[in-house]
Image (cartoon, rainbow, N blue to C red; front, side, top):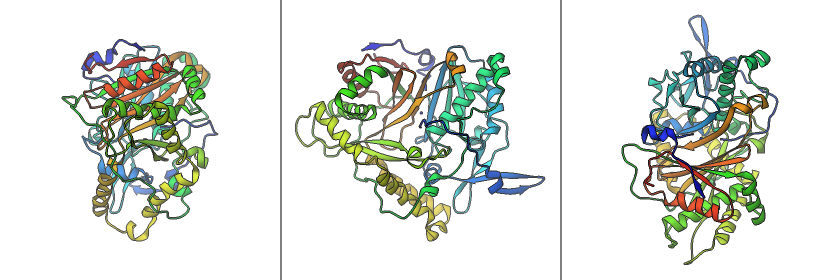
Length: 466
């Protein structure tokens, strides 16, 4: 296992320059909804577009704050230095084309809702702080995303109320394309400034669209084992990137008869069991929340949130386990849940509450109280989260200018270490984000993968002790 030099972004901080979080779908013809035709309110001489929050997004404004930001980051590293003014120009040109990003959050009597923003795009700034900070919209021209840069890297950070990773990837990729067209006039002259054919602008609430009937809650609310320990100081946010050759990783997973996701979830559970628990039998299960992109199951191209969480569960019950035993347990746990029927049960419970006429009539302040209680009750049901935003692809003309992608997640209640996966070309990047000072779980994770025959290169943002 080799170790890279710490990123220059980290040098600027241990003011972290984290290089960096949901899902890639097959290319389909561009499908555009026009919310302005469905929802609008008169304002002097023009109409202001407005839209509802999707079923999952309704929770995020209720629980978000400085300590629980619900922000993820996706970043792209180019082969050339970023020109700030050019990046700002690219954002200014792109934002009006994305109704799903060109909004501000408003508070109604019964629910939050989106309203067309109408202000200039957020100011692009050089990164000087840690990733995934709370987005204070009133200091960001009322937008719920930010764009920063550092050397060759463009960072997009998104408040989850807007969209999941697929929507974030859509926006960042088009922003990168627009920036490269401005940087290379020959590309712009050949292609113009239109969006690529595979970029969706669809704003359907696919939860409601695909909901069929009310179901009992299928979510596990038993408390999970939680990793604790000394935290990083002064608001520091640790990042550890592991670069894994996809070809070697596929050889390992094929030989074991598992998918890459199943293998990495099992290695994660194994490293928690060995490094955090020391092989002890815990009172509570190690449970890894795994977001599942629902779009392939329902042929959806929405850019709103459309995912549910399943949990890869490992409950140690004897003094010693081999990795092979843990891998089989995790594989069985995931495969028993990732099927259309079960996934539909999970989101149908939430949608049925949203559609209940009595609950819809409850004023927003009372809804907020109930949602906070339910969230605090259920949030501790998982030890951590591991999300895979997929195998990212770019148009061939832009490939010579794009080196890699990264992604990372903010912390949530009880979860102080998380993992994010993204792939580009022949490399998979597994990124740990954490506020814990002890990086033994991360070291154990990459050590195990290296032991299995995969060449691992590790890079950090420089805040951990070597």
